[in-house]
Length: 471
Image (cartoon, rainbow, N blue to C red; front, top):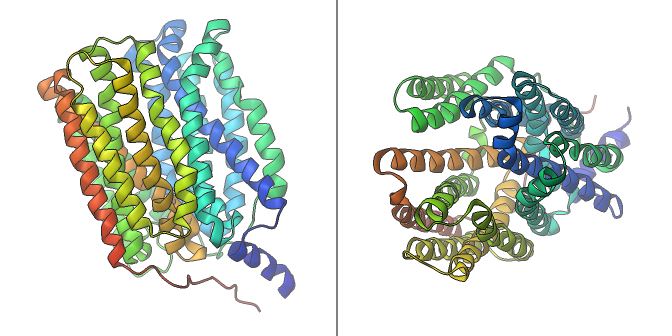
């Protein structure tokens, strides 16, 4: 292999892909993102129908969701680290194939255990996609366009999330639940066909993969996230044991990787001030988002008396507003400090949550809808700039770790918010939802303050680039 062969992937990593290959790479990324988001939204909506047709109890059928989510949770950081070592495309393309095959397996499942096993298989593919998505976006776009690229990704994600429930309802009205998973087949095949040729393929740094650290990472994330959710549902007991085990796994992982140049738990990246502040902003803001997102359906249905269908329609302005604001914010992020954009966006988000907490006893549908739109507008202004800063602060060879940490921060924040709602409902019942929304607005204001702290931190003027050693 000559020097020119080694330098070509490096140039791609530094400067993004040339046109038109860049556009085809984006198409593959968007197709994969659409497939993963639609699948999650559809499965959640269709779970009662699936449970009824398979003759499963609600508590057992929940594992159709839990098995998928738990698989993603335990694999995110190990796969992100593996991608940095062997190359992002080597994780992403097999992940697309696994997700597509898992979708077919879900569609032909005739029993609940078979469906759960297929969802776990599908979750492996989803973890491959999610862990590499941000790193591939960074390698696809030039540095001057990274913000708008992340903004377009957020738009696709939001629009897919908004479309999912409606699409699920349409499919279930004319066909069985099996077809909910088969719609992934043409999308997955198209993403694979385009991605194999168009996606960037920068070399990994080639270090041996640390399997013991991967197991400790899986124990840390799986124990903490799943244990916290179980604790919120069932109280102290096995959930608390799992949380303690997760924390112990995290402590052991940090001890094992002390002094490592490329640790699986990216402590090296967390020593970069603006990266650490961006991670903190992400965790706190997603905690506020999930606090609201879990509480609002109970507010609309149990307190305000709206139907399930009306609840879905009334919540739709939120993701639509995110999809509208995110590309605009992404373009601004290439020129305006993310600390400022994120602070403004999260302050708007806090205002929307505050207005939702003050809806009263019989609000009109329009009063609910415009408040939802304000929340989405604020969150859309925050998300793209924050993700851009987080990714660009990491050295190029650590893009996989940065993307994995981005997804992990989102997961930790959402878990914290969901657990808080579960505990509040356990202690005070669903009538506490307005208070929860008020609390969420305060959490969003805290996130805005953390975002503004980034204005005091100068981002690195030049990111270190890994250069392979030539024999």
